Length: 189
Image (cartoon, rainbow, N blue to C red):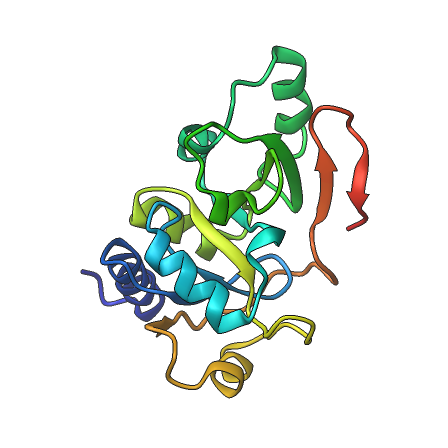
């Protein structure tokens, strides 16, 4: 451990994620709720807490593409080039999901929404947790997302295992979403 409070907080959040916990952390524009995407029980807990329908699917963030590999089908070189031109950064891609990707992550879709985050705290959390994280906005479905740790606590009280206090990025709104097959923008950023 180090004496830097932020580093210690990231290490603690990663430890909680690895132990099956649910954490809140800053992303490019808002606070996110996250957990280990391979633990269906924790993903279910997250969906219940947000009151998010299972059919919508969730976003995964990662520090590097290899953290996303277990959840995705293989991309063509042209698709990979298209994705790499925007990462790390605030573009989320819809990429065909692997057969093994949980329906809790995909929802009623054949694709999975994924992003290599450029937010330094979120990226370090992924590195220390050892893989991709579920990343969904810290809000109750249909309400405005939290943009700081105080708002997270106002919304969720003590129902989270940890809130990682650090500033969100400079993005004014949610990340852009694009389809890797067509290149089409699904949601403007």
